[in-house]
Image 1: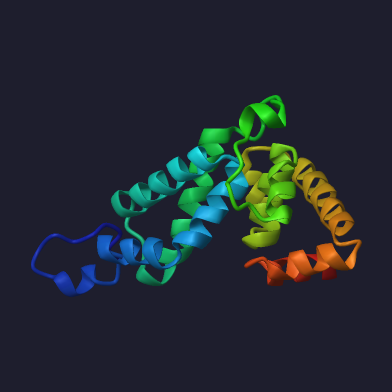
Image 2: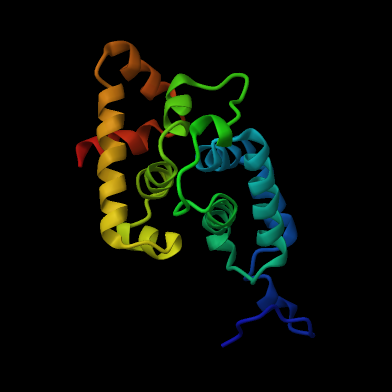
Length: 186
């Protein structure tokens, strides 16, 4: 079984893997969504940009990935870079110290960005990106119980935001409204 990209005569096998061009296409087509993923994790526009760029670089220059996994790998690269950059298990800094808001920030995105860092990471990873609590625990390097507690707290806050018709409309306007609807059904 071939694990690494082949650089010999058999170029047909190498096309099974995502190329630089494939990743550039993914990051270009889904720039807004990938940048929002980075922003929700970092709660800071400059750090989100750094995460986005590092994710692209890691996707292009990292281990080879099958083409059909390239989009998921791109998101995972951004998540891994955000974990390295933000260290969600470190003692909490104040929201003001770690956060710079975007100019046209959606009110719900602003509320999520203001949550404690571990809750925000678990919410984005488990609810929006569909990682299992065990996967979150492994990637974050924390006990499963901490992940479950953070997810529960994040969902309670989310349900609190959804108390009025105005905030429900705000939630439906977000690109990740379907993931939120699934989370509320749980």
